Image (cartoon, rainbow, N blue to C red; front, side, top):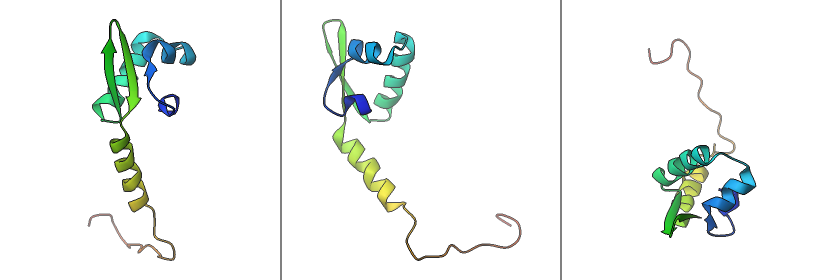
Amino acid sequence: MEMLRDGERCVCELQDELDAAQSRLSFHLRVLKDAGLVADRKEGRWSYYTIAPDAVAEVHAMSVALEPRRGVVPILRRGRCCG
């Protein structure tokens, strides 16, 4: 994701910079694509990847919403969990 921060990158560039096997890089890019965090496009035999800004904004908003509230002491339950 950091490497895509400045814009679209060819998979060959990512592979060179990461010194990663094509199969390993493809797996990770597929996971990011399936999660909706990156988009790809094909041009000839090359694939180009870019960050999906709406998805990243949604993840950011969710992360901010889940931050613990300041000054709130969590309630500790006594006894067994769920029981």
